[in-house]
Image (cartoon, rainbow, N blue to C red; front, side, top):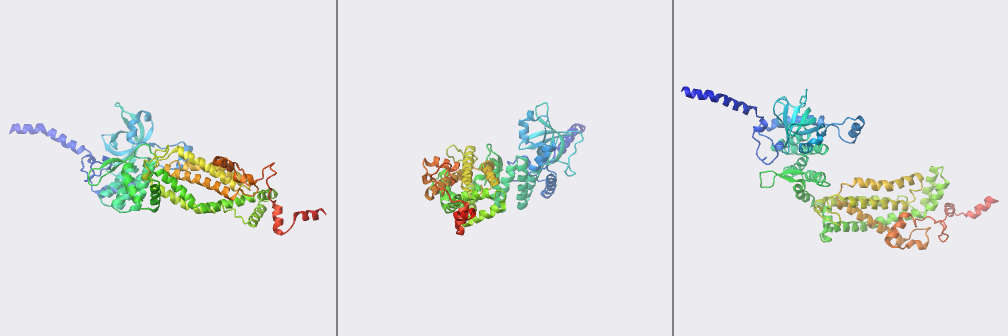
Amino acid sequence: MRRAVDHYVIFLPVLAGLALGILSVPASTWAKPLPGQEGLPPELVISAVPPLDDQIDVLKDLADYAEENAPETGFVASLKQMFSGQRGPRLINISDLAAHVEDLKGEIVAVEGVYEKQGDGQGLLRSIGVSCHLAWAGGTQPQGFPEAGSEGLPVRAEGMIEVNERGEPVVRVQKLTPALVLSFIRLARAYELDEEYKEAVEAYQSGARASDVAGYEYGPFARVHGAEVALGQLKDKAKARVMYDRAWTAYVTGNDGDFYTWVRPAGNDRWQRRPVREAIAEPLDNLKRGGFWYGLVSAFVTVAGGHKALGVILLAIVTRLMIYPLTKKQLSSMQAMQRIQPQIKQLQKKYKDDKQKFQEEFWKLCQQHSVNPLGGCLPLIVQMPILIMIYRGIRDYVVQFDGASFLWVKNLAQPDMPLLVAYAISMFLFQKMTEKMNPAASADPQQAQQQKMMAYLMPAMFFFLFRGLSAAFILYWLSANLVYFVEHLWYRHTHGAGEGVSPGEKKGSGGFAAAMAKMISGAGSGEEKKGDKSAPLPPSYEETRASAEGRKIGKEKDKKGK
């Protein structure tokens, strides 16, 4: 009996130590996770303890606090930071922090992940299977957390980067607050497991929007899985389509590297890590397949023998031919304005100090010649909705364009800089051609100067606006511009170059390149050529007014002389 007591006394401290050790392990590490989460990273796993309702309440408070205290973003905020010289810490993914620790040493940064306490003044932050050491700076106090503390919750740690003796990054924490992106995503996960799917999708959307600003690496999961819940549980195809579409734009188009998400294949209980492109290509294409404009683009690709680039070019040609009656009306109106260009210049010279009188006489002149100064713009406005719908069809067909090549373009679904440069050049030529064909706008020197500036600003503006768009879309607009140039030359060939141009100039020679050069340089634009006596002079403004009023200039001059 004594020996049994001795053994009990010996093992009592050991048993006590084990019990103390178990109690000291954070609840987030030993709480059993809810089923159906195998394969997800720990930051996305929701435990069974405490109850989901309690977890949802805590996470809602964290997300609200983080959203209310989030740093200002956007253009105005950037200007404030630039002029004040005060910039907030840069958000760094923990995986990037570990890879570039030497470059970031001494810099003030922010990192996000799930917090795990490791003793007084120390902790660990985990994200995507990578951890980062935290060490408190003097006087640092967590903010925005419940009374139970920040253990096992999504946090944002701001501080200076240091390196420990093992060469690992350590963040000397100066500020610890709830993490905006991860709080919303974990809230969405809790809602989803609690079968509150509408609230889950809204939380996923909030996390994705915050990720777009912050650049946090769980953003793709928020947008892609949120779309899966919207489609699979809510049967909301419209919302799922928007979320999938934004995921493609944000994480596939224009990105050389792959962004990853986690999906659970049908019939498989385990989650798998997949590239975003691979995860959303099929559902996104299926959601867009039934649309009219998608079907239109698909039909042209089929007619082109399945060659997607030729299908886009064929679509541009047919579209321009269909709206040629509008284009013809536009060109006719512009040509009519060319015919009265000499009279407009005479008016401008006569009333150079009286703009109001010039406007009155200008409109009278247009009325006498049955010319509408806005006739060149209205057909363009009418055809714009058609072109926009065609663009929508090309955008809807983007998954099918992925991987298709044409000439030097390796992927029609990705931006292509040389093709964009070619488009910008065509846009410049288009603006110059419009400038030469629309003398009404150049009647006022100030407007003429503005029009010349637009010839350079418009291509530059479209260049920057379109730099992130797919090559298929740029190919369509480039082809449409080239077809418009051909239509313009054909119209000039069949209808003449307008009054005030010698007969030998109307048809021109030298082929397409020479015709384009003459068009852009202004040759045959309706203006008299200096020293060219063979070209008939157009009637002056006074002769036109006298003819309309039944008077003769010569007789009036004789009367004035007497």
